[in-house]
Figure 1: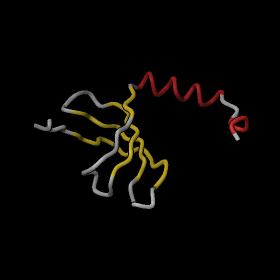
Figure 2: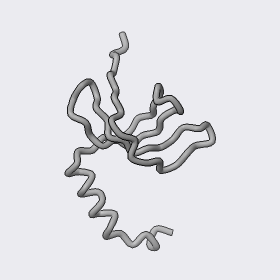
Figure 3: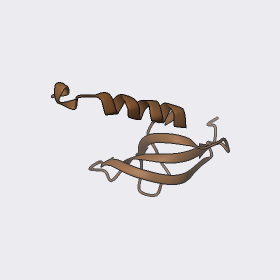
Figure 4: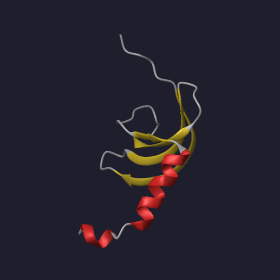
Length: 78
């Protein structure tokens, strides 16, 4: 039996990309199963009823990721 997951997107913070199927890879602030909201990165369909697997981050983890990205020289990855 499948487990029902309760998802509440508190805030859509931004789109990273839009696929040819219309799904948007988004950073959102989301509450999962009534828990405290966290930052969430995943693709969603247009009405936010279906989603892909994603990554959920605390504020501290997101700040650490920002700091890592700020230090990167992206030219080295071409």
